[in-house]
Image 1 (tube, one colour):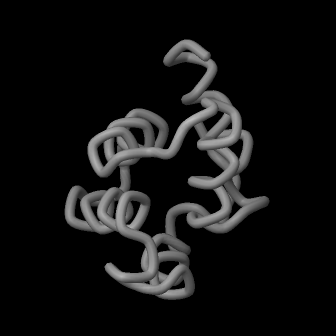
Image 2 (cartoon, rainbow, N blue to C red):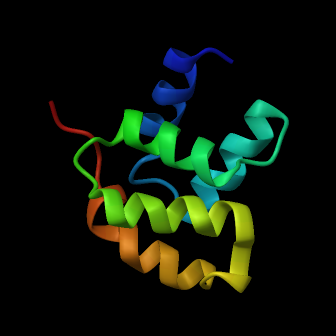
Length: 88
């Protein structure tokens, strides 16, 4: 997948899946586990309105899983931005 396809996929998933589900779907599409940096990068490109601190948490969760924070906590943290469709 190229960067435009990854960004489009994440935007398509917005409002239909939780943050943790989006990470897992993206990993499946890319054929590899996301690192802290790659999760931060792709979600930043797709959703520039999400604060850096929250995206850092998402990246850490993507790499470390529930040893960092629970999936429920990461979903709740990002719900205000990801629980709605993209408007332009």
